[in-house]
Length: 129
Image (tube, rainbow, N blue to C red):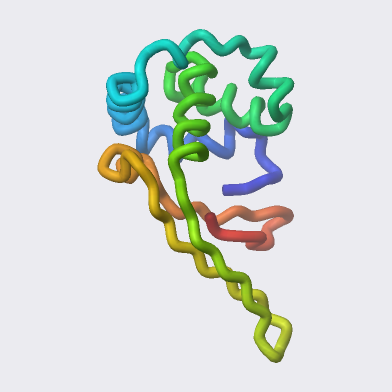
């Protein structure tokens, strides 16, 4: 995924690949968490929370044919219900190694939309997430 692309271009392929699963996860989250959180969050709040993230959310929502508030809450539920143990290590050559263990609620639901993305800038791999 190129960080040189617009969010709409960047997310087109992953959302195309995971659109039906994204809708399924949304239905499950709404059942588990309750409908009150969804569709009640104004776009102005999402933009004030994190303007860069808001542009990504808007693009994903457009591609998935969902309201931005739904995408915002899918992300927030993941953030709030994830418990991680991390370690960062630098070896003798200066190479940074990051290990992370994910423990989270809703695993059987959330794993349907998880993937590893390779993120590039100017054709250079910056990170995998």
